[in-house]
Image (cartoon, rainbow, N blue to C red):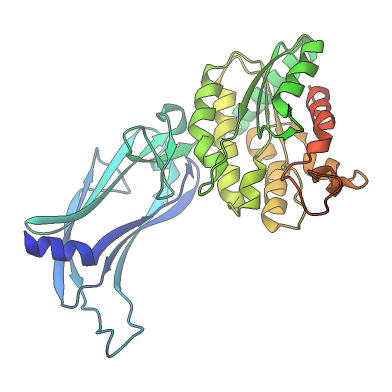
Length: 355
């Protein structure tokens, strides 16, 4: 037992996997065994799966661990890493839930284990974004949601129904997903609700949850999916979080989160129209913001047949002195907000006019 504790401190597993996978794409996943042991040894790797799958099969294999060089003779010596790669095929993962467990042991002692599940998005439990950078279910088990890419027939069906309903019906209620910023005590959500009320339109507003050490959109995804599935709104407007781009969250992750939200919205029969906005422009040039805006205008519009693209990034940039609209205090040249707070009414009106 004491030996197993010593080994456990110097050997570990690391899972490198995507946050999401589409059911029509191929990605790569790897499992790394990392060792700082000073001696040569062998460990046993077991793979357990819920059911037969072309990618993952139950098996056991031995891994030879090379000794780490002495840091006294080689101060730059690195830990030994053994990597096992898996080619993930979305078409093999998108039909039903699949659970996988990797168990690393020096028999009879288990050193560590990694477990996760592939689950189609519409069957996902309430997702949490954990400290390791993975999505997890309420019990803390890792989840990789499998997204569905609509077929051409599905896109045509959605696009036709959306345009038909938009022409013939009035929007009774809008679900808006966005950052809820404020200007001198006036909140964006409240102001938008006041203006919509004049048009006899209700508002369901869900704000991205800002955190210091994790992407706001990832942290909020579980809440957003739940609210979208339960809403009775007939229109949804989605504005990406300004926090994520400013903190360096990759455009790939942001686009996939938006894809998940759009898929959930299109599955709710009460929602008849979707409007997707580009992010608010940043005061400093940022390649992530450019990639995100381009992905929304082109990729998401094409992949999900979303015709209503509210290009806030471009519209706000065309306004004279637009950077000053971010200024918290007009008497100070340094106090800026991450949002164009002084364009609150303009943004509200853009949302209303996009209907």
